[in-house]
Length: 299
Ligand code: AHR
Image 1: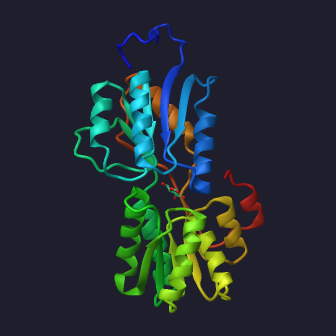
Image 2: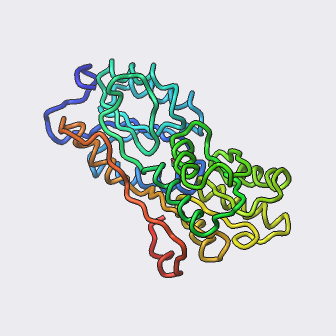
Image 3: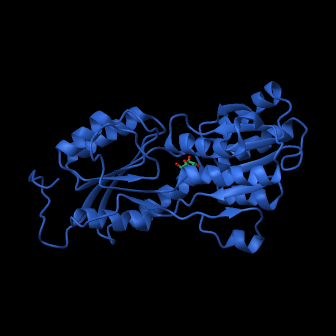
């Protein structure tokens, strides 16, 4: 981006920063809120010329988008990787093109040296630990079905590692992925209720899958939150509504509204300023919520 002569007049001071942003998909309420936050922060008024591409949860679409951004010679590339591995080649290409890379939300597992300038996202492992600690304290003998997110994604790998390290494998009767969507979460729980009828607690790696679990549990004639407890991560509006309704028992927040932090990081990266290697977005957790608190939330 620095020297190809593609029309960016660096130095005049008021030109827009061109940003290629590859969002991994639109799989969940969390993702929708994150996309809205990014688009609301990376506006022309704020100094950005944003190209935003949704990869529909497919790595090959993300790799293609990243290569398109290189071809466009954007000033900065930002992306949220759908899974952790498989990025070595394209990250090398971004480095060769001397385009700074900002990682958002999920993480990469790569052999490339110094693969990105900075990463902004949540501490997924801690989220899993927080969920596990609630279970250990409140349902120590629970028979747990773990509803995993997209396999191989940072959010799945780290939440599972954190949760399992606290509750112990012996309490987990089964696991399956619901790919972070409500429909696949529902289908996975329908199958789990057949395969593991002793299940009395579901740990879902996100709210959307937990909402799908509610549908499956009710269809089986059981009461979510009572016969089968549900613990989730995210804290999107529908998830916290389920907590208010007594259908979820505990929700660990994962805040998607950090577009302003991303915008700020991109400006600093563009200006060549030093940045921390990682910035953790702060989360809280909910055992209950009032209607007023729910109404006051941003997402
Ligand atoms: O990477 C963050 C996770 O991705 C969110 O918890 C989940 O809802 C989303 O799909």
